[in-house]
Amino acid sequence: MAIVAGMPLRLERARAWRAPESWRRVRTIEAHAAGEPLRVVVEGIPPIPGATILEKRRFAREHLDDLRRTLIFEPRGHADMYGAISTESVTPDGDLGVLFENVPSFVLALDAAVDVPGIGAVRYDLAFGGAFYAFVDAASVGLALTPDRFRDLIVAGIAIKRAVTAARPIPHPTEPDLSFLYGTIFTGGALGAGAQSRNVCVFAEGEVDRSPTGTGVSARVAIERARGRLGIDEPFVVESIIGTRFVGRALRALRWEGHDAVVPEVEGSAWITGRNELLVAPGDPLSEGFVLR
Image 1 (cartoon, helix red, strand yellow):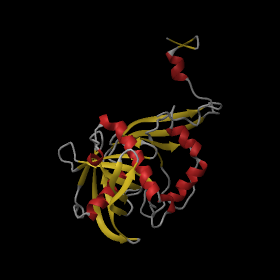
Image 2 (tube, one colour):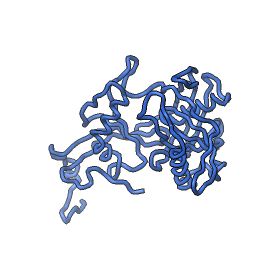
Image 3 (tube, helix red, strand yellow):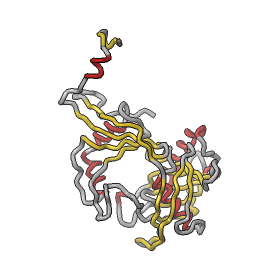
Image 4 (tube, helix red, strand yellow):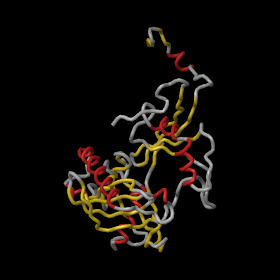
């Protein structure tokens, strides 16, 4: 028997408890992809209109941002969590509104340089793999790609992202919504046998990807191809900060919207960790969540 607010609460009563019908319910599948937490919404939100994934993204950003905060921020989630909403397909060959083969990925700049406050001159490559990233050799800025340097990587990653954003335009050739720098990816030698590199992605406002980052690996494949170090359909094995792995490949090369590009594929493993029914009680003062970092 437990005591709650001065009253006995028997286990049988706890098991039988049901939320009132007036409470909002959202059902999810909980998972991780190579260590990166992922909450997939499967029930509890209305259909999202839009003829393309970017149109659906714009609608969700404009009309469902309160739901995003509810599901992803504390106390129901945390700052480093990813969320996903499955939608109907928007392409004839799609099964769901997610990608199975990535978009054309390309290099915008190789061996660029920027002055970063607190660090100095930093050399970087700029590439797109579904989002734009600045790739920086970790050793060149005095960092190691290990969990004990987690906070140092965040501080440097944010500073580099801000400096690159301030220094140059980052244009996507067809989608203005994608014309921004999503994050900094630090690169270095692999620490485990059988991998060629290690990626640590610091994205958004200081989140660190626990996986090697799918879109980041796609952009890295474009860089390796542009530098003549990766053949078509040749595997490129990349570790994360915790040692999990993705395998990237350039399926084919093409000229796309004025860029030498590749169509990449990223292979990895995702694991289901649970099912969840998230509840939002009317009047909950923290219904839209909060973030502490």
